[in-house]
Image: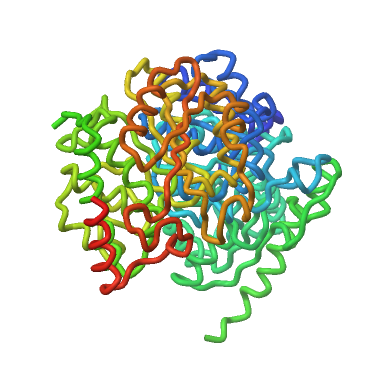
Length: 325
Length: 278
């Protein structure tokens, strides 16, 4: 594939969530949004202003929000509840597990402020464990789109096309918006954004852009990198992962999340079982984030194109040492 | 089959039969929560044979009243009541807690038991779900009500009070909650484990209209339900004073029977006591 993606302008992915929710709300009268005080900060204000009669303010009471959403879903509504990912996924885990997932209800949960790129708010507000916890829950679908445009589309799909519980993750900071409004998007089907057979980078969220930049740089050194956007963490696209393992022989994963249990782990579960190849993992190394500006933090924790490039080069060396089976 | 009974004597007879089924099913299962199930039986009987608008032949009837059981551990009482009301055959009660059964230890909708409104068992969650259903009912101008059964120990969960706040904030007069106030929990008396009193005042200060009744007396239960249905602009709470293990004198009020099943020998003795009580 030879498309070179270019940035249409920086835009926070949460804006895409807000637009997707508004759009779905205009077309589907059953959509009801729930707010836990920070509605503007997570992009729900667009919907709330347009449809005040379908917006429920529930205060700083996330556990109750999840239960109320479950009740609404039981009555045929499509509830959408968004707050910061640390609260949306972690404070409410038991409510999501029992009231939503065990009942297998179509509740859409938006987790904002994903990753260290949240910036100066620091560790308490940087969601770095949400994907791991959400993806182990039976019946749950987990989405992690890569830019504002894709977040808008993924939000519409979460509301409209998925049955059962969905967790969708997005960020706070304005980041390159580079995918097309007309892209083909399917839940559970990863997108190959850049072709190559030397090695594969599988990235999710903000790090997809960084992975592309790494691939462009490596191309100058005649290293042909395949870049895959894993926008759906669950159900994971096994077929695309197995093909990448078979055709490129090595995989680097990159995510703004703990390495343990996140997207990289989900990929490794498939690789280990189906087609073992050497892997490398970009993500948080089992520690908390801290305050700083988003770019500084992404650099400090190695979540940039440059670090991904280095991880690719180091993995290429291992790739050439045959596995001792 | 949408007839409603109003004679307390008749309801008491039915309660007695349901208690017998609970004892037998728990004995057969070899585990489960006997004390709470026997204590709350009269409330279930009153709801399913007198108060609720529902239809056992059409469990998903759109206009039915919704009953949310938040304390999933008293599922044996719910199952026995549903069976006696005709939702499924009574003989299925002997499958309680067994592999492949529709009667899970705590209610699970995915196993397909008719009449189950919610999979539940983790305490502190049911009232929130009831609030969500009641809000949906209001949004769609529906006339059905939501009833929610909570335990008293469960009120120690903070999420219950989040739900309590939201119910009065949205003026949910289509929501009636019932607390099984038996005063005991696994570790002992609620007032010694983590005190709940003054309970009536707590709920009132959260914006609820509160009624109290003897939850093992059908006349009082029906009267409280009737008053609760007339409340407007506020959710209603019924604090139902019950006795754990009610109906079986040997175990009445004994918290050690919270999570225990009777042996074969005990069950014969308990059923005899039950019959004498009647």
